[in-house]
Image 1 (spheres, rainbow, N blue to C red):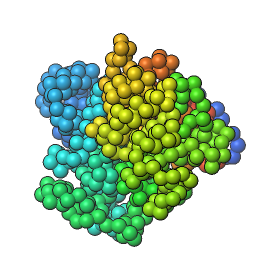
Image 2: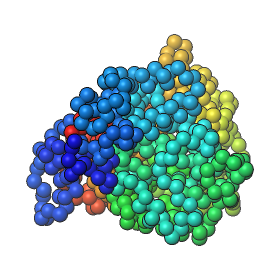
Image 3: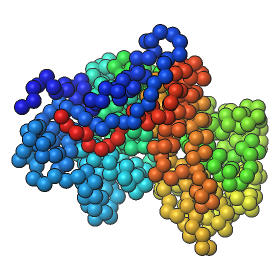
Image 4: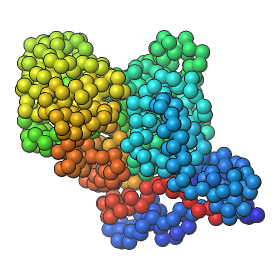
Length: 595
């Protein structure tokens, strides 16, 4: 029996201990080099990742029931002997590849996407390495299952399909004790926190604690698409109640069944949360996700200069939309500063995209005022313009001097935009008349229907192509299948934030930048656009294949580090061999060898 002093105890038990001393020296150098004498750090040789080897903190049945350590039927005969597993598993040793094949075979037997989602969550709960190994091999197929659009249905049914807890729940009852709640989390080296209050889940509205499916899904993508170790990922839901009447009456709803709190009580709860995170998990990045519009802007503005925070719905969506727009302009051969952009929807996503496009236009030489004059918004009441006295604060910078227009079709006729971007959360609002009008105005109209899930998309890919005689450059928030049009296969792009936030998190966790400026998202957009191949552009696709997403994330991480260095918050040595070093610290889901 192994001596007990060889085992890793709780504070380390969910991370791998590598026994390659050179690899350890390189990975640890990024943590310790700031303590060295001032001056340029000595150049270090970058070594390839070593084979994962570790001593687990548990053995026997506890080891099999620990999803971080469990290998299931892949435990070797020697591991079974050493770790007290003889007789606890079927006798045949099965490879990880064969295990993955079995998972996919069983998944394909089920035609219901929600049931597939439940199967994948169950796999994650019992064997994390295998979960990510399967996703890595079948990313394009499984992305719609583990995230949008299926995650929307999973959130709606969250209390009814609940199996096992994942992440942390903080409620108003925890006020004054949030630090204690965070200390209950077993993994101490938290790198990324995704937090929601469930106020506006996708295009589905207020789902309260049912929105926990979103942080869980987002963090799975951090691991699958950017190699963030799953033990460094913490999903959090802050339960402040819900205004959803059906949930308030549902006996299986798992949150507090009272109306949402707001005002000072709400703000004080988040002040305590941010402070507690900074104390307990000082290296963690906090991603705000799916908050109602006013809270989203308020929280971001309140903490963006004080903590490592960003809002994916504002900044991530803006970045991925700009990336798609930059790729589309590679097809149309036009300049960004010459474009007039019309938005349907003026919430956090729309205004965030507008701000990012404005920033890009300013880099191209326009003044801030002229850049904003190219960007127009329609909200639920009509054109955002200066004569209106009912505008929320975040819309005021786009309230142009122009007669009021009350319909999108009329706005397209009068404003004649080159690009139409939907972030309304209202399905079917890009009608045939509107899209045909866009095709009359433009040789290659840019139509982005970005609302999620699929049912809320402003139009389908097939509609966009058919109503423009195949001329549209189309992208959507949720996936659409390729469309055959007059013998040509057109492949719609999916403007999924997964192209952006995992790489942002990877870069921030590597270089430890203390704030997250908008410029990081601007540079990320350029990296995504530059990653689209000429062949993809020829097929009408404005985003790179998901199969290359880890490489895209590495490029984004390097861009994030560069911004951090240039803005003075990150030491310059982090740029040395940055892509190689980032690649070497990424988690891989292959099973380790147990010693």
